[in-house]
Structures are given as structure tokens and as C-alpha cells.
Image (tube, rainbow, N blue to C red; front, side, top):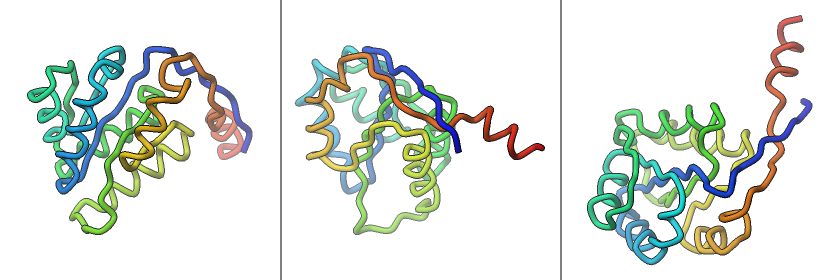
Length: 152
């Protein structure tokens, strides 16, 4: 597959997601990084986004709750190039009923080559990286080329 590029602006579109056992950890991380996050466009799955909005005052667009389709909504935004960073405090030790949605979300983030943090250490590294505040260019699949080859 051929690749093309996409520019991620300095002001990022960031998705915030957390499994139930890690919602408080993500909330605490957001509180500690409130100033940095306030310079970006934020969205999150229903429960997580609402919790962060209520506890931090950050402006965050909420989707549906993860099990009700929120993970898929964020995945669709990734595929449309509308999410630049995914911060997903994922709990690999607790199975969730919507596990296929979780795997699909992580798969889409990988396919579209966006930065992903699945735990606090990686989120800390990402927020301290120049990627977080500078315009950067990433390689993404060349969908038009892919489509043209598939429809020959």
C-alpha cells in the first residue's frame, strides 16, 4: 500500500477514553495536565468525557458511552482524520463486553498512524513531546490509491 501524509496542527484534536477501573487515573492525569490540555480540542466517550468535564471544567465534546457505541464513534473520527491523538487508559486485565470495539479502536489508531497512549507513562511521554504542541506531519494510508487498486 502506498502512503501519503497528513498534517497534525499545533492545536490537536484529542480523544480521551478510559476503562472503568482507570477512569479516576485518567481524571487525575487530566487534572495534572489541565493547562496543556486546555489548548486543544477534546472529546471523550460518554462517562469518561462527562467525568473529566465536570471535575476539571475542560471543554470536552462527549460521545456515547463506550459500550453504547462511543468507542466506535471515536474510531470513525479517527478514520475521517478528525482525531490527532488518542489517550486511552486501557485495562488489559479486565475483559469488557465491548472488547471487540476496543480492539477496533486501537486498530484504527494504528492504521491511521496517530499517536496513542494506553497508560499514564505513555501519556506523560506524549504530552511532554514536541508532537503535542507543534505541527507535525504523519504518514497515513493513501486511501484513494487503495480504493483505485481494489476497484480495478
